[in-house]
Structures are given as structure tokens and as C-alpha cells.
Amino acid sequence: MDPRLAPALRELNRLLAAAAVDLNAQLRFALLGGLAVSTWGVMRATQDIDFLADSDPSPIQNLAFRDKLAKFIERQNSRADWRVGDYDDPIPLLLKIELPAALGSVGADILWAHKRWQREALVRAVGVEVNGDNIPVLHPEDLILTKLDAGGPQDLLDVEELLSVAHPQLNMTRLKETAARIRLGKVLEKCLRDISGKK
Image (cartoon, rainbow, N blue to C red; front, side, top):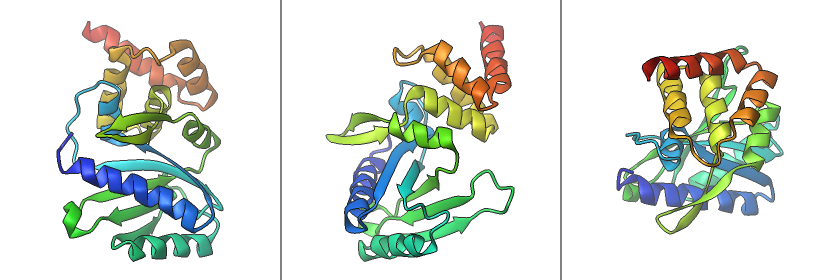
């Protein structure tokens, strides 16, 4: 991990946990993206910090909560900017956070869960120790599903790498069943074929 990302990750973990308490909201979050891929044993250089999050109330429908969360973050000397996607955007709501200069002005993208399987993924998140802090990280199977859902070239390369590592927490039968249920089965099978073709 880039040394400057460790304190930023620690601060983001603290910030989100504190927001849940301050706003009296059920707020769940877990690391995804390149840092999560690295957590599960795949060497991956990244300068980004990405989280998947869900809350009750959800800022997707509740504009007042959206405003309260942004104001809380700004009171913590960080910048908050909500990005609302178009009607057909695969990411309907994204919270961009920029940490203060003392933490390198590192930015983070927090994608708000809007599908049931994404919310289920947050419940299954695994606490992983990162530099002495317990950080929730998406389970390898759920991380693969989010990458399949995103579908970009780097996402699919990450999927192939994660599948090749054969992490003990990865249950292929369950992964295939879930992928089929949420209509990602064909993309998963293509990744598995591509892995076989490289051997």
C-alpha cells in the first residue's frame, strides 16, 4: 500500500464510523476497489480509496440526510461533494470526500448501495487489520461481483487475478450461483474461460 494511503484510510474509517454515531443512523461501509483487491492477495498499485456504503435512512431518497452527512464531514475539516448519476447511470449516487492537507488531501469515492445484493455484501464484509486498524473489506466473492457489475477492462482483470489466487474464503459454487441470480453469470464464465486459456 502507498504509505500515504494508510493514515488516510484510517481517517476515513474513523470519519464514517463517527458519522453514524453523530447522525444516529445505521451506516454500513466496506472497502472495495484496488485496495480491497490488494487485501485479498493480488498485488495492485492504486492511488484511490473506494468504499461501498449503505445507510438507514439512505441518501439516495433522503435529501435531508444527504445534507446532514455532507455537513458532518465538512465539520471534520474534510470536503464532501455529492455526485448524482443520470437515470440510467450504474452509479446513482456517489459521495466524494477530500481529506485535509495534513493527510495529503487524499480523496475517496463512496458509492451508495442501490441493489439488494450490494446491501447483502455489506452485511458479509470482513474486518481486516490494516496498520493496526480494523477496516471492513468486501468479502472476496462480493468484491468479484462488484467488479463484474462494473465491467471495465481493469475490473475484469481484477476478477481474473482474484479468481486465480484461490483464496480460502472463495467458494466457487456459491459465487457462480450468486452471479447467475443477479445476471452476472455469463460475465463470470467468460472470465473463467479467459483464465483457462492463459494456462
